[in-house]
Image (cartoon, rainbow, N blue to C red; front, side, top):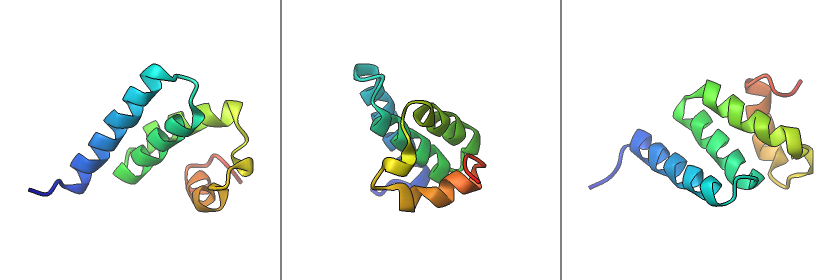
Length: 79
């Protein structure tokens, strides 16, 4: 059968969190957790994970910046 969106988001979050166990400093996996939380509707967790990434990595340097900037604005992480 097919998974609901919520189930798919939860599976993705679990996958990325497991990746962080092995590479806790992996900014890309941490960002993916934050973005997945955002799309799952958990803004608080999204903001927490993305803020952690922003402490050690300038997201403006990311090739994905144009895509994630609206999310950063929506979460109040950028003006």
